[in-house]
Length: 29
Image (cartoon, rainbow, N blue to C red):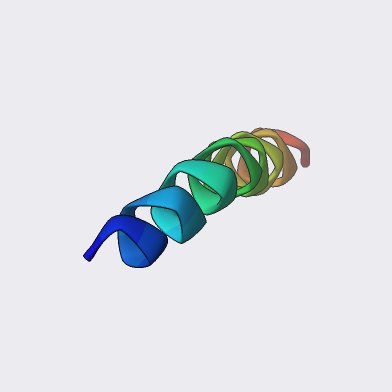
């Protein structure tokens, strides 16, 4: 559905930012 696609598009940047945060946390000692 269109609404689901809109929600997904809204959530994608946040998920990507979260993944980057987790990766940086893992790189830290």
